[in-house]
Image (cartoon, rainbow, N blue to C red; front, side, top):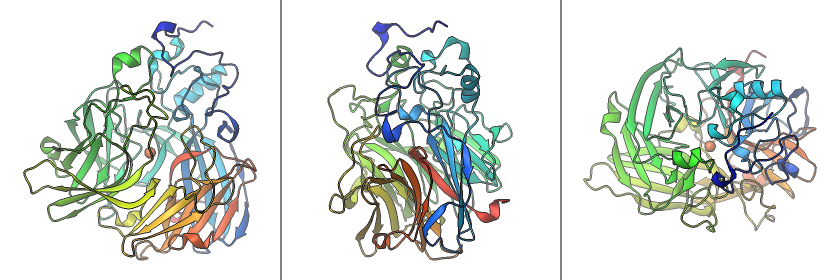
Length: 502
Ligand SMILES: [Fe+2]
């Protein structure tokens, strides 16, 4: 069938037509990053060490695992199909299950036995036969709230998932109350109230400045939608939540719809624009009173730890890079620019002062990404911070992959002792996002376990590693060994056993 590709003149280096009958030989599809595509279950995984007897629940995370060779040679790993990985842990035993999110995109492409949806978030590059169909890959994160498990992708609405079977139960619009076409992959839950605060940007499916804000109560009911405008149309990947505010860091990762129509990259970095922080009061009508603060330099927020208030002072804790995400999206002013690594920073805004200044301080002097805190204490000042990182003093860096250098370590920063501690995963081994699980529901902050997927690159295999969250350098308490590789992923969470049937 003839495909209506954009004309060659309109294409840039990011969208190159290809024969979709085989896989590209690019870092996204090669070696340890290559698609796995295997759905199934493995019971009674081998365990080295001892799984803590009290651990009862499921580690569930999302990943992007292309089910079909892409339509374009330089496709991004961000464009893979959502594949869920779950490790059910109970009575010292662990079972693995892996399952694709059954998106409309996956169903249509499976029926055709080939890719029909084109470049990342760019419907203009699709096969004409799928015009108007849901492009969601549902591949970025999961959230369990109000008894409902959702697979999330910021470019689309949520997909509802059965937490016991990982079966896809369908698209989810909060009983018709979600009006936007989009819903963030990084909603925030206030542990004091159980309220979930979420948002959507590019809410009509095109690039505009409208941001819709959703308040979802502890039972899962979407009770309120508010709306404000960002300074310019850009990627809004994460947000911050404090006791009284929801905060957005708008970075110049810009979307220009005319470029998208021409088949160019969906986002580009344009640091002629400022990084702006929008502070929205959480009270009803608060979006009308959004206040904007300008960062001293155009920088990129990658992911957030937490936000907390101290009188009129609002503290924002997040990972910041001095460039855009240039391994994925080009710098429009300097195509040769190299991506710089993220560092944790605390940004402080004095809401009582008339000025629009932000004061910035490093939180510790070591690179990192994929932040985690003890989420029972979100919106309050926390002591413990965990993250993925590298530490060449402990082991060599691994070859750069499709999304930059893989982590070789997890880090823990104790803000009281100001000490850093590291877990080095071993040669050829790459930890991913850490997930904190409290030892007991009422344990003090930071007392519990840290879990992470670890890629064993020389064995083409994956483990789930459990660490004492405050003794990372002691090494694993348990290594749960998978007999196969699961694809590298993005974000996950711990669902307690009380919420599961089996
Ligand atoms: Fe993310």
